[in-house]
Each structure stands twice: as C-alpha cells, then as structure tokens.
Length: 233
Image (cartoon, rainbow, N blue to C red):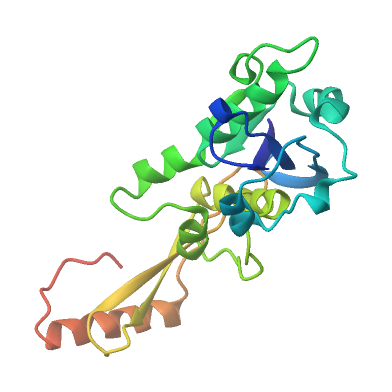
C-alpha cells in the first residue's frame, strides 16, 4: 500500500475568496515505512497573503516572489499522488484547496477524491479520543512524537509529524507506563504505541521486574483506600 501524508499552507482560509496554496509538503509511506520520497514546494500565489495566515506559518509575500506557480508543478504533483491513499489532518480543508488549484489548470483533473483514497486523521482522532483536543500538536503530545521544532506551521514538517502520529494511531502493541502525578496522588497512564514496521503487530511483554513493580503499585493503591480490581498477571 502506497500512502502519501500531505499538508498545505495557504494565503488564507477560504477558497471562495480565491485564497491559494503557497506550500505543499508530502511524505511517502510504503508498507508503513517512510521511503524518503518527498514532494515539497513553496508556490507563488499571485495574490497577497493574509496577515493572520502569516502569523500562523511565517511565510511572507517576499519569500515567494521567485517561486514557481502551482501550474508549474501540477503535472509532477498529479503523478506523485496518483493512486495513493492520502493521509491528511482535517482533509476537507486541504482537499478543498487542492481541488481549487486544479480547477484553475487549462486541463483540470477530476476532484482528488475520485483518483485518490483520502483518510482524515482528524476524523480518526475524534473517534478514538472523543471530547479531547485532537490538533496535530495535541496528538504529538498524546503519542509522544517530538514536535519541539514546530514553532510555526510548515507543510513538510507537519507532514513528517503527521506521518509519525498516523503510524502511532494505527500501530500495534501498546505499552503503559504508570507514573505518579505531581502531587503524589492518583496515578496516570502514559501510552506509547509501537507501529509494526513490517505490518505485523509486535507483542511486547512485561519483564519480571516490571510485573513485580506493577504488583507493588497496585498493593499501594489498595492500601491507600483506592478501589481494588481484579488485575490479570
């Protein structure tokens, strides 16, 4: 299965106001492994970027003055995407902008959804974590993906982070590390997903010292008055 993790940055929020794509970033996955085959371009939009958008991604009009236009890279981009499953966070936004850009070509292709499978990781996250924050930053924290270099949005960086998050969200074995909260009270569970590199789930079993520590923690919770449950060995 060939998958493309995709992100865009734009001049503004609405295609109805003829806002345009100014950065495309894509990361290719095959059999759940990054191949190193990326697609990345800054694009000249032939219009001014909204100040609010600049505050989000930091891309200025001056930075794009000598960059290619979408039409200049469109055919290469179509061939890169064709037949792949697209992994996108808040897919309606990015796909809407892609269709808007393609519609401006002299010979536009059909809507992207007709020639690519589209998976929306925001919709996935909302199903998996209802009632919680499911922004890319929130998911990076939840799945312990290092996003410390993400001071501003950037299409290629965000696609790389989303690829890691997606692999974690759809991964195999979970391990749970118990840790006391800052007040030394109720414990919290820190979940780390280990994505299977070969497509087969990895079973990671607790070691004997880990089992002993777990049993000791449970005894401590019972002694402190926490409700007792039947815990499997």
